[in-house]
Image (cartoon, rainbow, N blue to C red; front, side, top):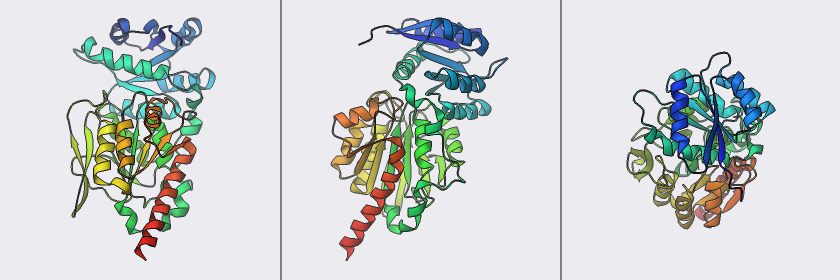
Length: 364
Protein backbone atom coordinates (compact mmCIF):
# COMPACT_ATOMS: atom_id res chain seq x y z
CA UNK A 1 0.00 0.00 0.00
CA UNK A 2 1.32 3.47 -0.89
CA UNK A 3 2.26 5.30 2.34
CA UNK A 4 3.33 8.55 0.64
CA UNK A 5 1.37 11.63 1.79
CA UNK A 6 -1.37 13.05 -0.41
CA UNK A 7 0.15 16.02 -2.23
CA UNK A 8 -2.17 19.06 -2.35
CA UNK A 9 -1.90 22.24 -4.41
CA UNK A 10 -4.08 25.18 -3.28
CA UNK A 11 -5.21 27.60 -6.00
CA UNK A 12 -6.88 30.81 -4.78
CA UNK A 13 -6.37 34.49 -5.53
CA UNK A 14 -6.80 35.41 -1.85
CA UNK A 15 -3.59 35.16 0.18
CA UNK A 16 -5.74 34.95 3.32
CA UNK A 17 -7.69 31.97 2.03
CA UNK A 18 -4.52 30.27 0.80
CA UNK A 19 -3.09 30.59 4.31
CA UNK A 20 -6.27 29.37 6.01
CA UNK A 21 -6.48 26.29 3.78
CA UNK A 22 -2.75 25.57 4.16
CA UNK A 23 -2.92 25.93 7.95
CA UNK A 24 -6.00 23.69 8.07
CA UNK A 25 -4.05 20.88 6.38
CA UNK A 26 -0.71 21.47 8.10
CA UNK A 27 -1.21 18.87 10.82
CA UNK A 28 -3.51 16.53 8.91
CA UNK A 29 -2.21 12.98 8.91
CA UNK A 30 -1.10 11.72 5.53
CA UNK A 31 -1.50 15.09 3.74
CA UNK A 32 1.15 17.52 2.51
CA UNK A 33 0.52 20.95 0.99
CA UNK A 34 3.18 21.04 -1.71
CA UNK A 35 2.39 24.56 -2.89
CA UNK A 36 -0.07 27.36 -3.49
CA UNK A 37 -0.93 29.46 -6.53
CA UNK A 38 -2.76 32.81 -6.89
CA UNK A 39 -4.18 32.07 -10.33
CA UNK A 40 -4.49 29.30 -12.96
CA UNK A 41 -1.41 30.41 -14.91
CA UNK A 42 0.85 29.93 -11.88
CA UNK A 43 -1.10 26.77 -11.00
CA UNK A 44 -0.41 25.26 -14.43
CA UNK A 45 3.34 25.56 -13.92
CA UNK A 46 3.18 24.23 -10.37
CA UNK A 47 1.07 21.25 -11.41
CA UNK A 48 3.79 20.25 -13.87
CA UNK A 49 6.61 20.89 -11.38
CA UNK A 50 5.07 19.60 -8.14
CA UNK A 51 2.81 16.80 -9.42
CA UNK A 52 0.02 17.19 -6.83
CA UNK A 53 -2.48 14.41 -6.18
CA UNK A 54 -5.37 16.78 -5.35
CA UNK A 55 -6.15 20.38 -6.30
CA UNK A 56 -8.31 22.87 -4.40
CA UNK A 57 -9.61 25.45 -6.87
CA UNK A 58 -11.28 28.82 -6.35
CA UNK A 59 -14.18 29.73 -8.63
CA UNK A 60 -13.52 33.46 -8.98
CA UNK A 61 -9.95 34.41 -9.93
CA UNK A 62 -8.24 37.04 -12.07
CA UNK A 63 -6.79 36.35 -15.54
CA UNK A 64 -8.70 33.03 -15.82
CA UNK A 65 -11.76 31.91 -13.85
CA UNK A 66 -11.88 28.55 -12.11
CA UNK A 67 -14.39 26.99 -14.51
CA UNK A 68 -12.31 27.77 -17.59
CA UNK A 69 -9.22 26.35 -15.91
CA UNK A 70 -11.09 23.25 -14.73
CA UNK A 71 -12.33 22.53 -18.24
CA UNK A 72 -8.78 22.78 -19.63
CA UNK A 73 -7.38 20.71 -16.77
CA UNK A 74 -9.85 17.87 -17.28
CA UNK A 75 -9.07 17.81 -20.98
CA UNK A 76 -5.29 17.74 -20.70
CA UNK A 77 -4.44 16.45 -17.21
CA UNK A 78 -7.46 15.02 -15.33
CA UNK A 79 -7.02 14.97 -11.58
CA UNK A 80 -9.20 15.22 -8.42
CA UNK A 81 -10.40 18.80 -7.88
CA UNK A 82 -12.20 20.24 -4.83
CA UNK A 83 -13.95 23.52 -5.62
CA UNK A 84 -13.66 26.30 -3.03
CA UNK A 85 -16.75 28.44 -3.50
CA UNK A 86 -18.36 31.42 -1.82
CA UNK A 87 -22.05 31.21 -0.94
CA UNK A 88 -23.09 33.85 -3.47
CA UNK A 89 -25.65 32.84 -6.06
CA UNK A 90 -23.27 33.18 -9.02
CA UNK A 91 -20.55 31.13 -7.31
CA UNK A 92 -22.99 28.40 -6.27
CA UNK A 93 -24.30 28.10 -9.83
CA UNK A 94 -20.72 27.97 -11.10
CA UNK A 95 -19.97 25.20 -8.62
CA UNK A 96 -22.80 23.10 -10.04
CA UNK A 97 -21.25 23.58 -13.48
CA UNK A 98 -17.90 22.56 -12.03
CA UNK A 99 -19.38 19.22 -10.99
CA UNK A 100 -20.53 18.68 -14.55
CA UNK A 101 -17.02 19.41 -15.76
CA UNK A 102 -15.50 16.83 -13.44
CA UNK A 103 -14.90 18.37 -10.00
CA UNK A 104 -15.38 15.79 -7.25
CA UNK A 105 -16.35 17.91 -4.22
CA UNK A 106 -17.07 21.41 -2.92
CA UNK A 107 -16.14 23.36 0.20
CA UNK A 108 -17.68 26.67 1.24
CA UNK A 109 -15.00 29.39 1.18
CA UNK A 110 -13.88 30.47 4.66
CA UNK A 111 -14.85 34.04 5.47
CA UNK A 112 -14.95 36.47 8.40
CA UNK A 113 -13.48 35.33 11.73
CA UNK A 114 -13.11 31.77 10.49
CA UNK A 115 -11.53 29.17 12.78
CA UNK A 116 -8.89 26.99 11.16
CA UNK A 117 -9.84 24.31 13.66
CA UNK A 118 -13.41 24.32 12.37
CA UNK A 119 -12.17 23.76 8.85
CA UNK A 120 -9.35 21.26 9.41
CA UNK A 121 -11.30 18.01 9.74
CA UNK A 122 -13.73 18.81 6.95
CA UNK A 123 -11.06 19.79 4.44
CA UNK A 124 -8.78 16.89 5.33
CA UNK A 125 -11.63 14.41 4.89
CA UNK A 126 -12.49 15.90 1.51
CA UNK A 127 -8.85 15.71 0.40
CA UNK A 128 -8.56 12.06 1.46
CA UNK A 129 -11.79 11.25 -0.32
CA UNK A 130 -10.74 13.09 -3.48
CA UNK A 131 -7.40 11.28 -3.49
CA UNK A 132 -9.27 7.97 -3.79
CA UNK A 133 -11.21 9.13 -6.84
CA UNK A 134 -11.20 6.98 -9.94
CA UNK A 135 -9.46 8.96 -12.72
CA UNK A 136 -11.57 7.22 -15.39
CA UNK A 137 -14.67 8.78 -13.83
CA UNK A 138 -13.47 12.41 -13.94
CA UNK A 139 -14.45 13.05 -17.56
CA UNK A 140 -17.78 14.90 -17.77
CA UNK A 141 -19.04 13.01 -20.83
CA UNK A 142 -20.24 9.98 -18.88
CA UNK A 143 -22.00 11.81 -16.08
CA UNK A 144 -23.23 14.94 -17.80
CA UNK A 145 -26.95 15.28 -17.37
CA UNK A 146 -29.01 14.42 -20.41
CA UNK A 147 -30.77 17.43 -21.89
CA UNK A 148 -34.42 17.61 -20.94
CA UNK A 149 -35.21 17.91 -24.63
CA UNK A 150 -33.69 14.51 -25.38
CA UNK A 151 -35.71 11.30 -25.12
CA UNK A 152 -34.96 9.79 -21.73
CA UNK A 153 -34.41 6.08 -21.18
CA UNK A 154 -37.49 5.85 -19.01
CA UNK A 155 -39.83 7.58 -21.43
CA UNK A 156 -41.00 4.35 -23.03
CA UNK A 157 -42.43 2.99 -19.77
CA UNK A 158 -44.07 6.20 -18.60
CA UNK A 159 -47.54 5.01 -19.59
CA UNK A 160 -47.11 1.75 -17.60
CA UNK A 161 -46.68 3.51 -14.26
CA UNK A 162 -50.28 3.86 -13.04
CA UNK A 163 -51.58 5.38 -9.83
CA UNK A 164 -50.39 2.28 -7.99
CA UNK A 165 -46.83 3.48 -8.50
CA UNK A 166 -47.52 6.53 -6.33
CA UNK A 167 -47.35 4.19 -3.33
CA UNK A 168 -43.76 3.31 -4.26
CA UNK A 169 -40.63 5.30 -3.43
CA UNK A 170 -37.12 5.67 -4.85
CA UNK A 171 -34.40 6.64 -2.35
CA UNK A 172 -30.93 7.67 -3.57
CA UNK A 173 -27.82 8.39 -1.50
CA UNK A 174 -24.40 9.68 -2.57
CA UNK A 175 -21.35 11.64 -1.45
CA UNK A 176 -18.12 12.44 -3.34
CA UNK A 177 -18.87 12.63 -7.05
CA UNK A 178 -22.58 12.36 -6.40
CA UNK A 179 -24.03 15.48 -8.04
CA UNK A 180 -23.07 14.53 -11.60
CA UNK A 181 -23.86 10.86 -10.98
CA UNK A 182 -27.32 11.60 -9.58
CA UNK A 183 -28.07 14.00 -12.44
CA UNK A 184 -27.19 11.30 -14.96
CA UNK A 185 -29.68 8.89 -13.37
CA UNK A 186 -32.67 11.12 -12.68
CA UNK A 187 -32.50 12.76 -16.11
CA UNK A 188 -33.69 9.38 -17.41
CA UNK A 189 -36.75 9.17 -15.16
CA UNK A 190 -40.18 9.85 -16.69
CA UNK A 191 -42.34 12.72 -15.50
CA UNK A 192 -44.79 10.38 -13.71
CA UNK A 193 -42.11 8.54 -11.73
CA UNK A 194 -42.96 7.62 -8.12
CA UNK A 195 -41.61 10.11 -5.57
CA UNK A 196 -37.82 10.25 -5.25
CA UNK A 197 -35.89 11.29 -2.15
CA UNK A 198 -32.17 12.10 -2.32
CA UNK A 199 -29.51 12.60 0.30
CA UNK A 200 -26.29 14.03 -1.14
CA UNK A 201 -23.47 15.09 1.18
CA UNK A 202 -23.24 18.80 0.40
CA UNK A 203 -22.88 22.00 2.47
CA UNK A 204 -25.88 24.24 3.23
CA UNK A 205 -26.96 26.59 0.41
CA UNK A 206 -25.40 24.37 -2.26
CA UNK A 207 -28.22 21.81 -2.04
CA UNK A 208 -30.77 24.41 -3.15
CA UNK A 209 -28.62 25.25 -6.19
CA UNK A 210 -28.16 21.53 -6.86
CA UNK A 211 -31.95 21.17 -6.98
CA UNK A 212 -32.31 24.17 -9.30
CA UNK A 213 -29.65 22.78 -11.61
CA UNK A 214 -31.29 19.36 -11.83
CA UNK A 215 -34.69 20.87 -12.51
CA UNK A 216 -33.37 22.12 -15.85
CA UNK A 217 -32.32 18.66 -17.06
CA UNK A 218 -35.02 16.49 -15.51
CA UNK A 219 -38.61 15.70 -16.48
CA UNK A 220 -39.61 15.51 -12.80
CA UNK A 221 -40.09 18.48 -10.49
CA UNK A 222 -37.05 18.96 -8.23
CA UNK A 223 -36.74 20.96 -5.03
CA UNK A 224 -34.70 21.21 -1.86
CA UNK A 225 -36.90 19.59 0.77
CA UNK A 226 -38.64 21.60 3.46
CA UNK A 227 -40.20 20.13 6.58
CA UNK A 228 -43.64 18.76 5.74
CA UNK A 229 -43.18 18.61 1.96
CA UNK A 230 -45.49 16.06 0.38
CA UNK A 231 -44.13 12.97 -1.34
CA UNK A 232 -45.96 12.61 -4.63
CA UNK A 233 -45.39 11.17 -8.11
CA UNK A 234 -43.27 13.33 -10.37
CA UNK A 235 -41.44 15.03 -7.48
CA UNK A 236 -37.82 14.77 -6.30
CA UNK A 237 -36.96 16.05 -2.82
CA UNK A 238 -33.32 16.69 -1.87
CA UNK A 239 -32.22 16.77 1.77
CA UNK A 240 -30.98 20.28 2.66
CA UNK A 241 -27.37 20.67 3.71
CA UNK A 242 -26.78 20.29 7.47
CA UNK A 243 -30.20 18.66 8.09
CA UNK A 244 -31.32 15.03 8.23
CA UNK A 245 -34.32 13.95 6.14
CA UNK A 246 -36.74 11.24 7.27
CA UNK A 247 -40.16 10.12 6.05
CA UNK A 248 -43.57 10.07 7.70
CA UNK A 249 -46.49 8.11 6.29
CA UNK A 250 -50.14 8.11 7.30
CA UNK A 251 -53.60 7.61 5.84
CA UNK A 252 -53.46 11.24 4.74
CA UNK A 253 -50.33 10.66 2.68
CA UNK A 254 -46.55 10.74 2.99
CA UNK A 255 -44.31 13.67 3.89
CA UNK A 256 -40.70 14.35 4.71
CA UNK A 257 -39.48 15.59 8.05
CA UNK A 258 -36.42 17.85 8.13
CA UNK A 259 -34.54 18.20 11.40
CA UNK A 260 -31.10 18.68 12.91
CA UNK A 261 -29.51 16.15 15.20
CA UNK A 262 -26.08 14.60 15.66
CA UNK A 263 -23.81 13.67 12.78
CA UNK A 264 -24.30 10.10 11.58
CA UNK A 265 -21.28 8.53 9.87
CA UNK A 266 -19.72 12.01 10.22
CA UNK A 267 -22.49 13.38 8.02
CA UNK A 268 -25.56 15.60 8.19
CA UNK A 269 -27.60 14.93 6.11
CA UNK A 270 -26.95 11.22 6.44
CA UNK A 271 -27.91 8.57 3.91
CA UNK A 272 -28.18 6.03 6.75
CA UNK A 273 -30.80 8.17 8.49
CA UNK A 274 -32.86 8.47 5.30
CA UNK A 275 -32.55 4.80 4.29
CA UNK A 276 -33.48 3.59 7.80
CA UNK A 277 -36.60 5.75 7.70
CA UNK A 278 -37.47 4.43 4.23
CA UNK A 279 -37.15 0.86 5.55
CA UNK A 280 -39.62 1.64 8.33
CA UNK A 281 -42.16 3.54 6.22
CA UNK A 282 -42.07 1.91 2.78
CA UNK A 283 -40.38 -1.48 3.31
CA UNK A 284 -40.88 -3.67 0.20
CA UNK A 285 -42.48 -0.76 -1.67
CA UNK A 286 -39.13 1.06 -1.90
CA UNK A 287 -36.09 0.92 -4.14
CA UNK A 288 -32.80 2.13 -2.64
CA UNK A 289 -29.80 3.24 -4.68
CA UNK A 290 -26.36 3.86 -3.12
CA UNK A 291 -23.88 5.71 -5.30
CA UNK A 292 -20.30 6.98 -5.27
CA UNK A 293 -18.83 8.30 -2.02
CA UNK A 294 -16.15 7.81 0.61
CA UNK A 295 -16.83 6.07 3.90
CA UNK A 296 -19.75 3.87 4.90
CA UNK A 297 -22.77 6.19 5.14
CA UNK A 298 -25.80 4.46 3.68
CA UNK A 299 -24.56 0.88 3.98
CA UNK A 300 -26.32 0.04 7.25
CA UNK A 301 -29.47 1.87 6.20
CA UNK A 302 -29.49 -0.01 2.90
CA UNK A 303 -29.14 -3.30 4.78
CA UNK A 304 -32.22 -2.33 6.81
CA UNK A 305 -34.04 -1.61 3.55
CA UNK A 306 -33.13 -5.00 2.12
CA UNK A 307 -34.13 -6.77 5.32
CA UNK A 308 -37.50 -4.97 5.11
CA UNK A 309 -38.04 -6.35 1.59
CA UNK A 310 -36.91 -3.38 -0.51
CA UNK A 311 -34.98 -3.67 -3.76
CA UNK A 312 -31.46 -2.27 -3.27
CA UNK A 313 -28.87 -1.26 -5.88
CA UNK A 314 -25.22 -0.32 -5.37
CA UNK A 315 -23.11 1.38 -8.03
CA UNK A 316 -20.19 -0.73 -9.26
CA UNK A 317 -16.52 0.07 -8.74
CA UNK A 318 -15.66 0.78 -12.37
CA UNK A 319 -18.09 3.70 -12.67
CA UNK A 320 -17.90 5.05 -9.10
CA UNK A 321 -15.80 8.17 -8.66
CA UNK A 322 -15.12 6.91 -5.11
CA UNK A 323 -16.17 3.34 -4.34
CA UNK A 324 -16.24 3.56 -0.52
CA UNK A 325 -19.97 3.71 0.26
CA UNK A 326 -21.11 1.16 -2.37
CA UNK A 327 -18.25 -1.17 -1.42
CA UNK A 328 -19.31 -1.19 2.22
CA UNK A 329 -22.93 -1.91 1.30
CA UNK A 330 -21.85 -4.80 -0.93
CA UNK A 331 -19.55 -6.15 1.80
CA UNK A 332 -22.45 -6.16 4.28
CA UNK A 333 -24.77 -7.94 1.84
CA UNK A 334 -27.05 -4.90 1.64
CA UNK A 335 -27.27 -4.72 -2.17
CA UNK A 336 -29.57 -6.95 -4.19
CA UNK A 337 -27.82 -5.73 -7.37
CA UNK A 338 -24.46 -4.15 -8.24
CA UNK A 339 -24.68 -2.16 -11.46
CA UNK A 340 -22.68 0.28 -13.60
CA UNK A 341 -23.98 3.83 -13.72
CA UNK A 342 -25.46 3.56 -17.20
CA UNK A 343 -27.70 0.65 -16.15
CA UNK A 344 -29.09 2.01 -12.88
CA UNK A 345 -31.96 4.17 -14.18
CA UNK A 346 -33.25 1.50 -16.58
CA UNK A 347 -32.98 -1.14 -13.85
CA UNK A 348 -35.00 1.01 -11.43
CA UNK A 349 -37.72 1.36 -14.07
CA UNK A 350 -37.62 -2.38 -14.79
CA UNK A 351 -37.98 -3.15 -11.08
CA UNK A 352 -40.98 -0.83 -10.85
CA UNK A 353 -42.78 -2.40 -13.81
CA UNK A 354 -42.08 -5.89 -12.43
CA UNK A 355 -43.47 -4.88 -9.04
CA UNK A 356 -46.57 -3.52 -10.73
CA UNK A 357 -46.99 -6.73 -12.70
CA UNK A 358 -46.70 -8.84 -9.54
CA UNK A 359 -49.21 -6.60 -7.77
CA UNK A 360 -51.66 -6.99 -10.63
CA UNK A 361 -51.25 -10.77 -10.57
CA UNK A 362 -51.95 -10.91 -6.85
CA UNK A 363 -55.03 -8.76 -7.34
CA UNK A 364 -56.62 -11.27 -9.72
